[in-house]
Amino acid sequence: MEMCPPEKQSKPFFFHFRVAHDRKRPSFVRGAMNMTTSYIFDDNTDIAIEMASWSSRGGWKDNAFKIRLKRACFTAPQYLPTVYNTLKATLFGETQCPWPPGAYYHPNVSMEIRFTLPVFYYGKYRADLGFTDHATNEMEACVRATIKVVPKTR
Image 1: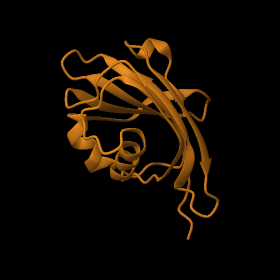
Image 2: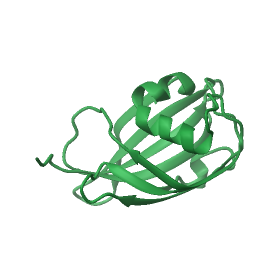
Image 3: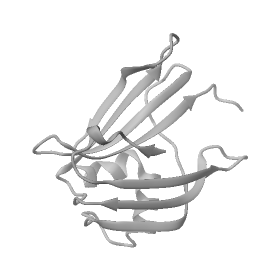
Image 4: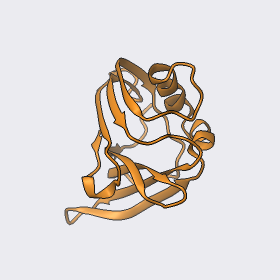
């Protein structure tokens, strides 16, 4: 995971997440997280997921998958419950959304990451997870991850 290019976001945002996968359970990750934000994460924030696929000719091909979830505080627990609950517990304690701007650090984050998304072709994808202001549609923060879709093994 890494930060998106600076031209994609309008406000200062720092994010670093060091990840180690479990060998027996590939969807289980452990890591350390360091994040600094300058905006309030509340229901005026929308979540935008934009995916690009790796082309057979080389290079990223945009618009492989796009989804926008409005009202982040309400929809994040529904679509990503394990990620949302783990981050809430480790970074914010029992504080309910909205979350204030600030610097957040946790040296030991562990969570199970499972997504319920449409069927994808096997291959390599680049996912940009962005947080946008609902009124202005400006990208306030963005995190980028590279994902490999492989056949399910038993």
